[in-house]
Length: 290
Length: 305
Image (cartoon, rainbow over all chains, first blue to last red; front, side):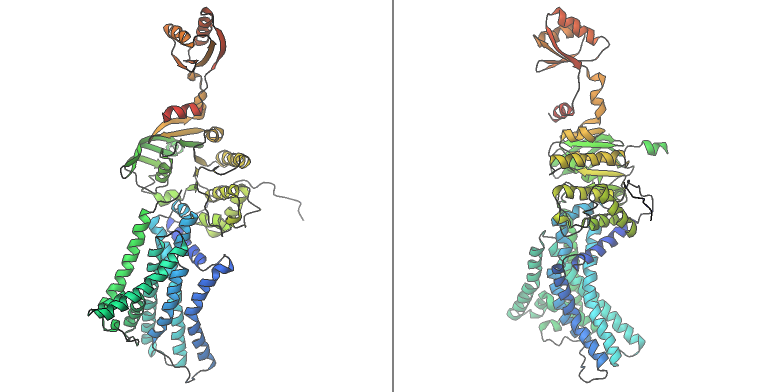
């Protein structure tokens, strides 16, 4: 055994390769995913992310488990693909309201935004990274469970016929999942960029869909333009968009099913674009603490 | 090649910046060379605005600005890969371990993960937080947080370090240690430093040169050693009428300024003899005759008027 000891750690210059500035976006997105999921944080910080993931995944996991344990069982009545999104939208709502604000609010409150702006990131690339992180986690919740369901359908022998149909179903699943994730992610980030305190952002995000539901339903019943007013209801709108992607009819009776598909997509896309634009505009106005 | 070596770290010519109708920088000219440079100025003098422009976070409204040879607004991300920045505020995410934060910032500045982990640990050892590196930042004292800020600015081996009030909130012992660390970084690590502060004593202790901002322009820029140059003249205090002595010296060709009964006589080969002889002729007692040392405080007060 050598008796050698390190008595001083002299400063060493770094002459090796450096990643390009665009890699900083990936690092920030990865770091944000870790933060919002509560990784490397206290157990308490993991509760809400875990709860939303459980809500999104549990029914699919139970179904897949039953499909494996009880193959061919008549108990396994499979609904239409779009129906699962009614469950998922609840998980998305909770995640967007109570977990996602952590991604941006805390950076402003903790002064990290100033450090990020002194790195190769700028306001726009910072926001893109944050948005990608939130949408990534939301997409995991919107794509994961239906993908498990698709596998279960296939295992049960009641899935799409042939490779082409299976791939078409996969395409619809990915499109619907991604659109839902972007919809709720953009809403969350647009509201979160208004607040430094996460709890305030959570309250507002929590209330917006509820208010939109009350206003949409109220106006639908009170006016003769009932169909269009249903588009104000954010829950109905996001779920209806998924049904339209799947080409299925929403079994829940409501005026929204009578609205033209192009209008449903236009309003959904418009809300996403408006939310993203607002977040970008807002971040150009923010004075960064130095 | 020699042009690159001799090029100033920061070069500004006629830099202007406004926020609406508030004109903050009104044609700033300066050259910051290698070593440790102090950036002084009263509140509202434009220090933070200048740092923002150096980081390339805001567009300027006129003039030329070059940092490490590039325009920060046009090449912001590439430039910031080579910059380290320790902000003034003490807020850092409380639930994050110091090592994780430093590693994260090093990765953002382009270091591969393994290297970033290694250098984060080393940087925390360098700033004296080796044993504390896995502690959540929220449990650390203000002094320790200042050191974490220094470590995150150092870990990716920047060419230029921007330190904004690095001793703010520190007690005297911690302040001495931080200043010693800054001196070590500037001299031993070979990293150029721009140190923004409003504490003259700190700037005098660790900096090689200083840039003083006043009213949106550079009031003074130069090496601190220049303040003590022989050209600064002789300082004279006498028992007697200082004004009379000043008048006689001026009549004999000397340049004299008077302030609070203290005369400053411009340097010349015969200045000492002239003063001695004149004081003797006037029958005054000579209380002080010494090379005039212009302090940073003198300059700061002068340019801030």
